[in-house]
Amino acid sequence: MLKKLFYILLLVPALALPLEGFGQTAQPVAVLSWKAKTYVPSSYQGKILPGSTTPLLASLDIFMSGKAVNLSGYKIYWYLNNTLIDRGVGLQSVSIRTPQTLGGGSITLRAQIPDFSSGSLVKSVSIPLVSPSIVIENPSGPSELFSKTLRLKIVPYFFTVSDLSSLKFNWSVGGIEVKAAEDPQNLIINTNPDAAPGAALSVSATVSNPAGYFESASAQKSFTLSN
Image (cartoon, rainbow, N blue to C red; front, side):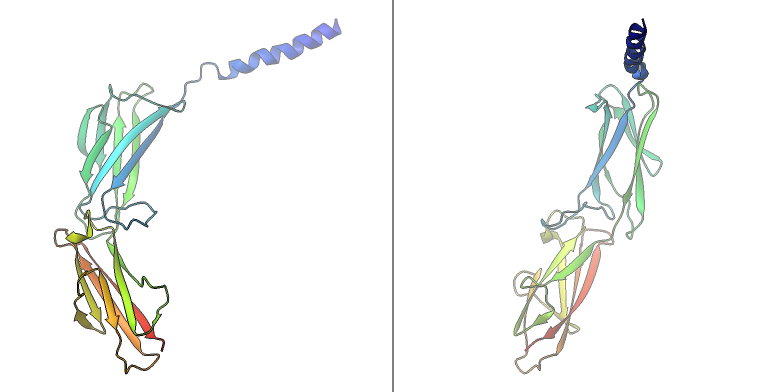
C-alpha cells in the first residue's frame, strides 16, 4: 500500500508539469532596423551612421515563438520625431531622409501597429546623427617619421555620397595650399634635400560635398624628417 502511494505521489507532480505553461501566450518581439546611405571605406566594419539629409531605409519585423509574423494584413504607422511620415497596410519598410542639421544629436523613429493581435504594438529606436570626418593616412606605414618622399591619402567617412568623385579635396602643406598631381585624394610630398633631420612638416586637408548641406570635414597631421 505504501509502495502504491509513493508511485501516486510521484505521478501527480509529473502530470502537473506540462500544465504550468498551459494557456500562456507567446509575446511578440519587435525589431526595428535601419541602414544609412553614407560613404565609408570598404575596410570599415562598424555601423554606417547618417548625417544631415542622409537617405535612410528602416524596416519593422515581428517575431513570435522565434518565427516571423506575416504583417501584410496589418496597418503600420511610421513616425519621425513624433510626426507621422507614412502609413499603410503591410508597410514594413520606409525610406526617409534625415533632417538638415549641423551634425550631432539624434532622431527618433517609431513604428506602430494599433490593432496587432495582442494589442497595440509600438517599437521605437534612437538613431545618432554624425558630422562627416576624414583621416589623413600614410599608406607606407603608421609612423609619422619620413624621409625623402611622403605619400598621404585622405579617407572620408559619413559623407552623403555614393562614391568619392562627388567630393572636393583640398591639401595644405606648411600652411600653403597645394594641388595633387592626378588623384586629389592622394598627395606625394618630396622633401627639400637640404632639410635637416628632425625638421617638422604640418599637413592639413579639407573635404567638402558641394551638393550636401553642411558637409565638410578637416584634419591635420604633423610629420618629422627622420634622415
